[in-house]
Length: 452
Image (cartoon, rainbow, N blue to C red; front, side):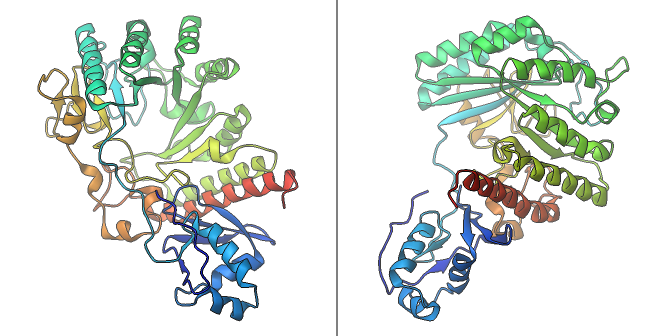
């Protein structure tokens, strides 16, 4: 987004962003943020809040100066600071995140295998455990199609999320592929990243050494501590998976391998969410809480468990825990913002074991969904994405007009109902809280360095 040129005009009329959020942080400070402009959060004193409140879209700096009994030079200086991140503007041409004309990177969910050693209660894969992993010929075609696309489109980066089933059960099959595609893409000026989306019940010294060498990260599924996790994520043969995940997660943390934990919040683990929050903060790993799809949750318990968990996070902020770099709720992006929820339909999609490319991995093996094949010689991967499904544009009028539209982007497009995320009302309560915790994190840092 272009920054509005700074102006110094006494007759300039100041206008506040329609996506503004202003909330108190403590007795001395408030935060203000333009929810449609990235990294725009600012801390304000009571006097500065008073100035912002006086801006009405009709009064000039000179008129505000007289009304507030503040020097016009002071008002100009303060206004120019707020203009830089579009808290206010000297006109009403506020920007919003826009879809680029063409992708500079691609991000794919790769379904490496049907096989999994767990029996998760909410698994969406209809073909689970029907066959083995991706054939060597399919992997080779995938490599060639990616390199062809990267070279033709001058891409800067390609990322694979190697998922399943359980991808680490297929580790040896992908061990040679990852260095090979990395080198081939490097030869055409494109960077390659990979991560395993895993239940982390399988981890060997060989896997650890390889991931350290190749810079491979991990996305780990964990639904709680002990019983809370094991209720929804047991082994197929019976028995809980938590003790295995905990042991292996600690190994990754000890070796400083990048890892993010994803928790599917459901009725079975809601009670354990606060305890899980303390556990993840202690490990100091990034974590995301996602609400289960296709199930009705106890709304009252959901909200109370979340609020208790965020209270724990607030305590941790006061001891130096980095909230803004460690936690995400669902698909909310309060810092980065976005023009759509994920890469699907613009710069990414999901590639099935047989080489089929779908809009999303939940569409695998669904013949009613539009798909392409990486074996099609006439289309590169960007062509396939552009000519595929485009659910991301299906948003309700309410969502399009909402000040949080760039924060939640209407949620996952696959699961919207009438163009809206089912958790919309919850988001309206959680988003201000996320910004508040960011503000408290910043306030603590400034105070620690004696900058306030």
